[in-house]
Amino acid sequence: MNDARLRAEDVTLAYDKRVVAEHLDVQIADGSFTVIVGPNACGKSTLLKSLARVLKPQSGAVYLDGQAIASYPSKQVAKQLGMLPQSPIVPGGIVVEELVARGRFAHQRLLKQWSPEDEAAVTEAMRLTEVSDLADRFVDELSGGQRQRVWLAMALAQQTPILLLDEPTTFLDLSHQFEVLDLCAELHEQGRTIVAVLHDLNHACRYATELIVMKAGKVIAQGAPAEVMTAQQVEDVFAMPCRVIDDPETGTPMVVPADRHRRRGARTPEAARA
Amino acid sequence: MTATLEKRPAKRAVVRAGAFSVRLYPRALIVGVVLVLIALTMALVNLTTGDFPVPVGEVLKSLAGKGTAGTDFIVYELRLPRVLVTLLVGLALGASGAVFQSLTRNPLGSPDFVGLTTGAASGALIVMLIVGGGGLQVSAGAITGCVVTAVVVYLLAFRRGVQPFRLVLMGIGVSALLEALNSYLIYRAQLNEAIAAQVWLIGSVNGRGWTEVVIVAVTVVVLVPLVVHYGRHLKMLALGDEMAVLHGVPVERSRAVLALAAVSLSAGATAAAGPIAFVALAAPPLAARLSSSPSSGILPAAGMGAALLSAGDWAAQNALPGNDIPVGVITAALGGVYLTWLLFHEKRGARA
Image (cartoon, rainbow over all chains, first blue to last red; front, side):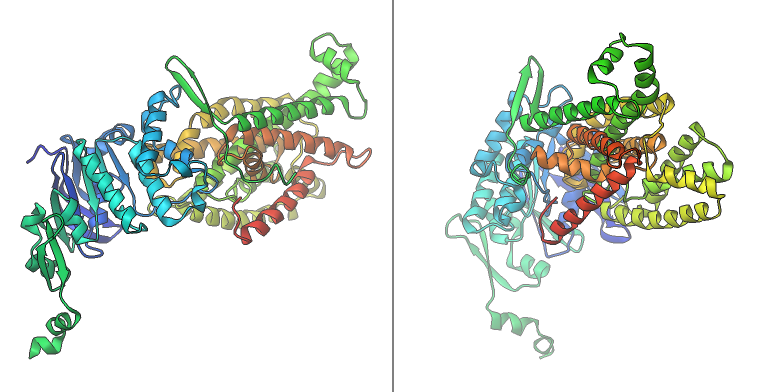
């Protein structure tokens, strides 16, 4: 599997001196829809940032097509790999269309600032994320959900074969959550490699072809949802007793947390001593 | 006036020819052209006014090389250097301010506030009052002071990269220290030296010659095209470092080039005309509002700088009859009004 386009090899990830993950090895299967799950602060987003070269590993390296990602010119990477970050800065005084259009930066040059391809990519990205009607609205005046779709449109306009998404469903209502996940699934079917951090395990099981389960900076399991998502695994990783049943809609694993009373019984120290 | 200052989405237009393509904001273009026309008109007016009024026709004749010896002397020796310095310093300050405000993502992040102009003043005062130099040496002192201050502020603000807000705060702190130094330098000087220094500190284009024109012209000709070229990077940097990296901007390099160019523009302007206040602060947002485009429109900001300073210099020459006051007094007064307005609106949650 050493020929995966995108992989992290023996990376140690840290913010200043606070180490988040040590000696981590991760391969992103080509053409997969990989979903990274794990409890809060387990290093999911940090891993994603390092894969997107936004965060430099303290040691080890991320490789794109067999070459250290840091050794490429930035623009060259930006044509291959895009990412929807978790909380981008919302700029003032800029309208939706203009922001999405900035997603074409990697494809533009001094004398080629707005090609017909740029125009087509922006229109298509806005159509897919259903923000076409918002084109002339100011980004800082949108709701959280609208804004999230605008950021997604900007990432789509970049038209990269590899797309990383850090919690793409935050701020979205139920139907928009599924629209975004459906869109990711369609992009995946068209041949793109998708890597997403998701919190909802059932969403993860439904959409992922490959799950990466993380806990405390380590990859605990990696594989198809049906193999990885077991009741024991969920309890080990999330400290949450549960049942895993077949999703009546899709047949994928579905995590049903245990009842409050049973959970409390299993977890309180008194119960453990008894 | 209020109607034109309203926030409204900008209309876009595309120009394509073969492989060449560019996206334009017609309104920003029009605003830029109008501002340049205003600046040039004011420049022409300034060529006609003074102790010896010269009619516009005579000035134009002289500029075309067909003037009399008398008008040629007045135009080329007395007034043209001053008028050119005014235009170019305005351009440099407007462009410098636009870059700084965009890099710091802060309307207060202009060279006036992050200590650069104060640093330039310190450099110039040290040359004037301690070394005892004049003319070119003062300009060199101003440039050195400006660059040294920029480096110090940058290093003090550096902690895992430079956070824009930290940079502005450090700049304000360093600026306060340098103000104290400047006051001390003036206090310990001889009276006549102190007066000369104080006049320089106000910022003026009065009595500027071709040397100053060359200093600021070289700065503008070299650096304005450079910052315009990097303008697209600037727009991406405004979305945050993370976003800029993701879209392929070489963040550290772009920021270093832009910051260095903006510092140099500010240094060149200050070397030629002294620390003229508030043009760098007010020109970019005013231009952005008029062209109702997202900030960092460098050329409209530069045009606005030139127009403001040329108009300011006309006012400086004509506000008090027979008394040619430094243009820095006018810009400071206008700037004070602008700053009050800015803070008032910031407090109410509106964006500049």
